[in-house]
Amino acid sequence: MPIASKEVATKPHSTVVIIPCLNEEEHIERTITHFTAEPPHIVCRIVVADGGSTDRTLKIVEQCALRDSRVVLLNNNQRIQGSGINRAVELYGDLAPFIVRVDAHADYPVGFCAKLLAAQKITGAQSVVVSMIAKGITCFQTAAAAAQNSKLGNGGAAHRTVPEGRFVDHGHHALMNVNAFRSVGGYDEAFSHNEDAELDMRLNAAGSRIYLCEANITYYPRKSMSSLFNQYKNFGRGRAMTIIKHNAKPKLRQVLPVVIGPIVGVSLLSPLAPVLAVPAAFWAAASLTYGLALGFNQKSWCACGAGIAAMLMHLGFSIGFLSQVVRRKALGGPRPSLGTQLDAG
Image (cartoon, rainbow, N blue to C red; front, side, top):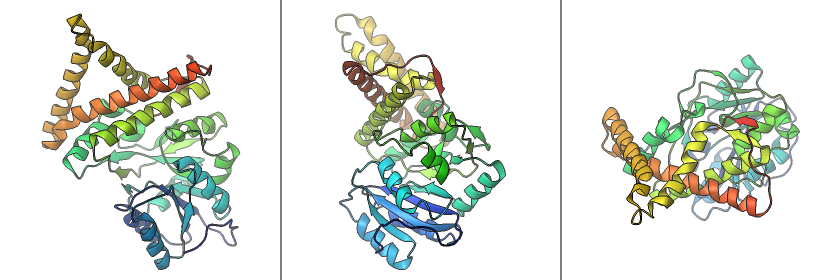
């Protein structure tokens, strides 16, 4: 298969598609095939930045490369998504004016890159982002998807609902102008999660415009309770890092989940004072009731478990966020203030 090396454009192209991945044997072939269906003048390279997969992902990518020479494999030794994308831009960013960031475990509408380019041409935006609508296959995934698609799980984030085409501060990353990306230094590789919101803050500060396009993608949630919890713990840690780095003010929907960890911790003392269990009991009851309502509304018994999934998401986020704040405070790092508004989902 083609070996990753720096390339320079010899004729006009539109986009380089970059797919950071790790152990995505279930989804990677479908994802690559979707983008090989777009013509070469729209998609000139499909770079799979692999973070050290141990399943069949690499073999599948090699097979795809044999069918379409635009597919190349890039070893992402740093493992995190941001570093893989940065490296891909370094090697292939001169081939086209735009990159398109792609998630391996998601489905994309037909002509996705063409739609992004059309939105960029109309708006002149330096970044075109999309909404991410969750969908489940297993019963637990269905519950997690119901939670993630609702205010219970997303707090009303713009890129977690069906979009109406407008300028935003943040969205799920899709198309980015290569020059704008490079001018702010690309992704901060200290971030394993929330690197997209952190980059958007720098893009906004540099005067770049971000447009939420009506080309939403379908996202498949984690399949187990533990993996969902750990994912949101990492999200919480990344959110805290972003707030601390930019001295930013989080929005209310980002603050509310943070209090869950402390109220659950306090509830453990309820044998000494039963009233200490009231806040946690209220949160649990509200989450479970909301989840049941979602399930009944969707006529899905599996979706009735959305409250359980949301509780895992809230608690994981809180633990991750607070652990990062404590860690930074112990190291003498800056603390968040009531400064810049952070509009990230």
